[in-house]
Image (tube, rainbow, N blue to C red; front, top):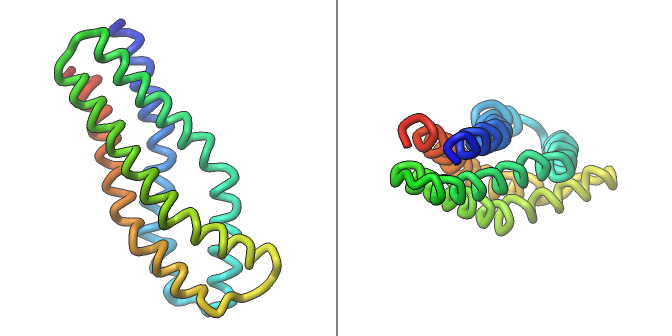
Length: 157
């Protein structure tokens, strides 16, 4: 069971690292760059980014959540208290990330994505992006916590 736990943790780490890296890039590079773009460029660039992100990011995102949940289950059967606690922290962090995404980020993605695909500039594009930006640091922290917890569980659990 320990080998299964380690393999599942590896899959969870890799899948969640994709989401973490994407969110980290958005916070570190994309957000400040788009703050200097005009509304037309902002709508087009971020709308298309959000559109393609929403189409492609569910693959690593869902894989990460499922692998993290299975990691926790394997930890329960393997019997390590630290691995169980770490798996639980990782899964709770991902659930909170998903709630934030579904309530705040996702709706912005849909509006900006639809505008970009239609070739229109939204008059509230900057406010929509500010709403999205307002939670990106929290999303980065939650994904980072997930990765740290998964690593802790496999390395020390």
